[in-house]
Image (cartoon, rainbow over all chains, first blue to last red; front, side, top):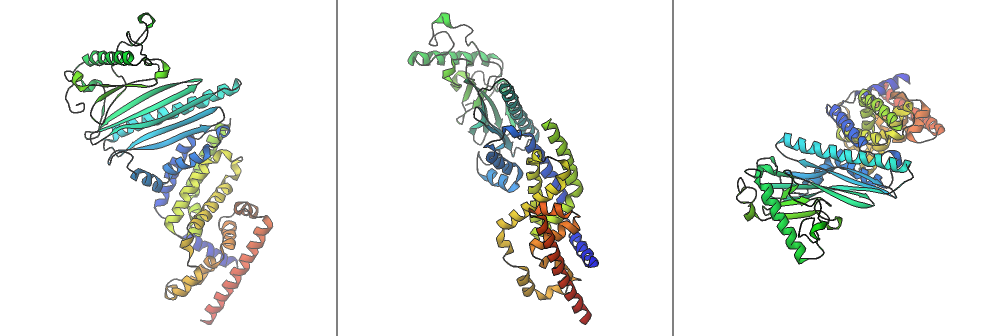
Length: 295
Length: 172
């Protein structure tokens, strides 16, 4: 009997091991580590489990990721996927952080740089949240929420603009936006300064925005901006908006217009929310390097 | 403290998987009988395990804990892909008699495959993976007494089969 068992064992062990095993195992370990890092500690786990599994599915199962990536989320070539989602749902603590990932860029350096940035920022946001919740719990509890995700603002043959938003809720909420705009044909990241011949664009754009603010405030008494003539008595405008930053958040709209974005509270009271101003191309034409992107 | 444990667990886990991956593959293969499916099971098992690594209280149980995950993932897989099993071994044997002659020791080989799953897995885990019967019972989620009786039954079945084979060979 013993010999028979040995023979059976030999057969069992003789099943050939596919050479892909190493790859599959290492890949699964790598993915698993990634998932573990983003995993909420036990005490934070609640109804988030299902969402986690879904995300795990996306990252883990090549089939599922493929299926999802085949859905034309954006255009045909360069795609944006949700790489990871951090989710925490507890009575008074809420986090939903979606981390995008840009896929299929030929320019790997650019793709890696952006994706690394998205991932590390997403992770930092989550870690901060967990730390804050820990503090709050230690100090008798409270409310805390963070909601972060992304919008594809523009996706045409030439331009991919992704806006990532983060809404922090502690009593009232604050919202910040970060945009990345990519020239899909040349696979480069477009920055605001590179669109213009020199720094005078800051003045041009700022003046136009102030003008738009005043017009809006004059025609609609609900609209208030922190500029003179922006809906408040002049003497109440302290530290108002005077000019955009050189690296002000912006994107390029589908029609090739430059859109400048301001975070909540940046240029107006909180109820005005995140603000966007489309700058007429006519105003910019003398400053633009070319009409390639903005037209 | 908890996090530190988790990280230690992770290190040990990664080491365990790297060292024993072929064993886990073979176990998965004993269920799926198919290379690609066995690879899928191994991959899914690693993922599942890593997600619940924090819940493992004692590192000493890691190996049998992971066996359990592989077994469950395999069985889940079989359930989901029942259509792949529509042809049972008997039918297959009946339909493909000529091929049997190609292999040496073919009957011995079939001896294990012919064993119903519930007996086969006990034999594999206990004899080929060298696990204690108590661990086998835990992995398969059955009572120790059940594991024991299945093992005896399995041996009995194998013995009968093997003796038959022997008898045939003698005659031949």
